[in-house]
Image (cartoon, rainbow, N blue to C red; front, side, top):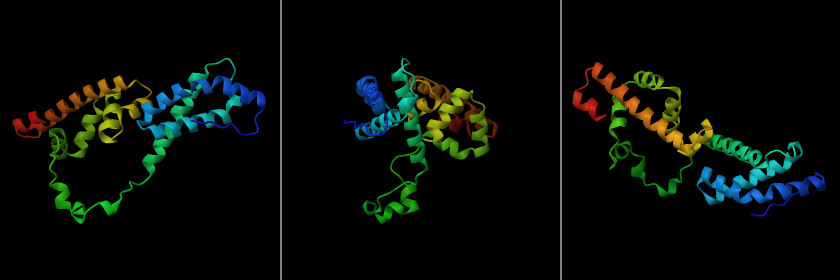
Length: 200
């Protein structure tokens, strides 16, 4: 990746940036790849990060941790980019889809069957699911919400909550287990057959 430094900053500032920031490009690229899981997107993220860092390098206090500063810029850039992508409508290349794929009967008769959890969630009203989700401890609730409801990847949730990916995974596991138990109890209280409740 080539970085061209332009602008109205002083030559001293440019030299400092080249000396302090450019040696960290490889580390920045590794972190960017962990965020994006795509080589081209990772390069774009590094480029945006370095451009923003260069533009605001005059605000950087010399002698402080430039690596942490650059990683913070990258994280903020990635979160903002992800949020803007979430606001965009879903794009579908319709020329590759057959007419049958738009038919409701075909969508419902998919070969892959849904999980027992999804089947149980469909039979319980939304208010009951929200109540069960609300009964979870906050850390578990946020992990379950972001992964299972909003569809974020583990790395995205980790960045959003500012916690390690392993913590997201353990909170998600415990949250799903607790949520399952709560929904099974609600199902039994509402008279669902015992076999159906225990399968969920």
